[in-house]
Length: 331
Image (cartoon, rainbow, N blue to C red; front, side, top):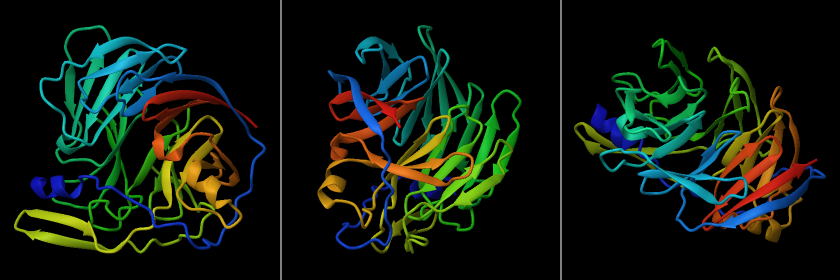
C-alpha cells in the first residue's frame, strides 16, 4: 500500500487550458497602489521563498542549505541543513523563530534545524506519504495525508509535543489520493484559520483551529465542477493515477495576511484585457472572515517567471527565476 501511495501522491505538472473564450465572470478592479520598494538580482538558482515577519529565506533545488536575506534582499548567511542524503521532491520549507523546517512528502518526514547549531533532528509525521503541509508553530503542523490502507486524503493537525492528532474529512469524498482535489494550503497571519483552495474548481474552504469547516465560499469564476477524470493503471501493489482528460486550472497560488486571502487566478475574466492577463499575475482578494470577494489587481511582474510569494502585512515579496522584489500594497 505504501508503494502504491508513493506513486499516487507524486505531484504532476498541472497546466491550464488556453483562455481563448469567454469564461462567464467579471472582475471588480481595486484601486490598489502596488509600488516596488526594493529589488535584488539573485546569485543563486532559487526554488522557494519562505520566512517569518522577522526573517526571509531562500531554498534551492538541491535542498542541502537555505539562505537568509537582509532587509535589502541580499544574502547574508548560508545555513547548511546537514541532511545526510538527497531529499526527494516534493519538498517544502518553513521557518519559525530560530527553526528551519523541511518537509519531505514522499517519506512522511519532517526535519528540524536550529540555525547556527550543529546537527539536525527528524520526526516521522505520517507512516504514509502526504501531499500538502503547513507549519502553524514550532510544534503544530497540518498535513493532508492518509490513514493506513486508504487512498482517501484527510487534513490532519499534529501536535508534535503532545502527540494529539485532529482530523478533518473536508474534500475526502473520493479515494483517489487527492488527485482530483489537489490545491493550495495556507493560513492567515496569526495561523488561526486554514484555507484550502483547489486548483481545478471554484471554491475556498476555511477550516478553524478544531479542524472543522468554518465556511465554503465560491471564488468569482464559474468553474463549479472541474470534471477531473482519473484513470488508474498498473498491476499489483504499484498503481498510478493519471488525468485522462485535459484539466482547466482555475487557481494557481494563494496566500493570506491578517485581513485578506489573495488567490492568483489562472482564468481570464470577460472584462479583462487579454494582453494584461497573459503578462501579469492577477490577484483576486477575499475577506478572511467571510470569504467574500473584495476585488482584484495586477502585480507588475512577468507572470511566467514567478516562483513563489511571501506576504507580511502590506509587504509582498515576489520570487522570480533570477530576482526577488518587494512590493508595498496600499489600497
